[in-house]
Image 1 (cartoon, helix red, strand yellow):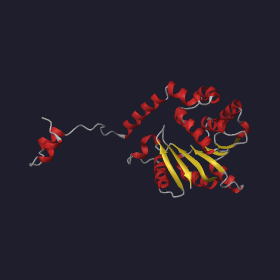
Image 2 (cartoon, one colour):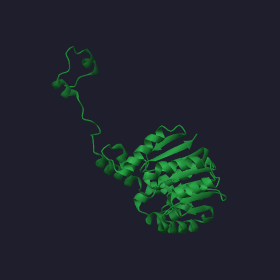
Image 3 (tube, helix red, strand yellow):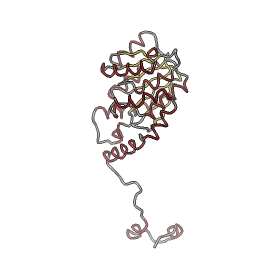
Length: 257
């Protein structure tokens, strides 16, 4: 027999084990391992990349949409941002009215193309990438999209490229930056970008959930530990206001105070 709330409140006797079993409910969400969470997240992510969602996220920019499929086909799924992430990056740039941007980790240009297309004709995007083969593909799509004149491609280590910008007197002159590169270097990239981005500017950091591994204390590989430590440090960083957005593999949006 089910016990009403009133019965439970006035019952003089303590709940026995038998009574407890009669009223306890099965947990709605059973405990799962990090691997099962990752599999479930991967399944959801796949469902979100179906044609209706992809059409919605590329429909706002017809020109970008015409290149989106070809560019997506040449990239490994795990090595690029998703269509909804690219749309978010472009929207942030537009909201800021950004003219000067930096991308750390270009790969084959999927996210940088989304940003470059919404920059004004006089805009500039510094694109840092160490892999020559990836840059060759990116440059091809920049040319096809007609944004090559906005691109300042740096084929070198991102730390070196960012330091050169600082030495060139460009501190506090950038509106927007995006980090999607070597995970063990996130803290170094972030510190350099904080010098380059103006007050009120935005730094977006990708892969902050790292396939759910950051939430599993048993996972202690160097990349996971690095991202986990970065997440902890940025939460306590008084120099920025942040919001972690759980799309794809997680993005943290940081506004410089």
